[in-house]
Length: 127
Image 1 (spheres, one colour):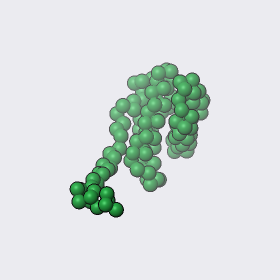
Image 2 (tube, one colour):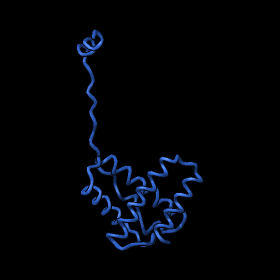
Image 3 (spheres, one colour):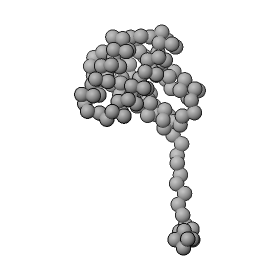
């Protein structure tokens, strides 16, 4: 099956499952980038030719290309994993052939929220 056909089938499935339009659009954008990358970098046009190493290379490419935070890249990766899961559930590809379970999320920067001490709170309340 061609990647484009699989993406269109995945999109239809998301519509049938009543996913939010914004979510579906986001998924399609990421999967379009994924399809283009697979064609340009590996000359792969069929889902049967996917391997886990291709996803790792895509992540590396995104890291080098963009200024996106790892949390954003993890969201993109989650979309690719959902797509792969769909392909295996629909038996377009074999579960043993491609496993995204071994692809770990990128380490995300911890956000530390600075809290106000009592003196700062009193100053804010007085103003």
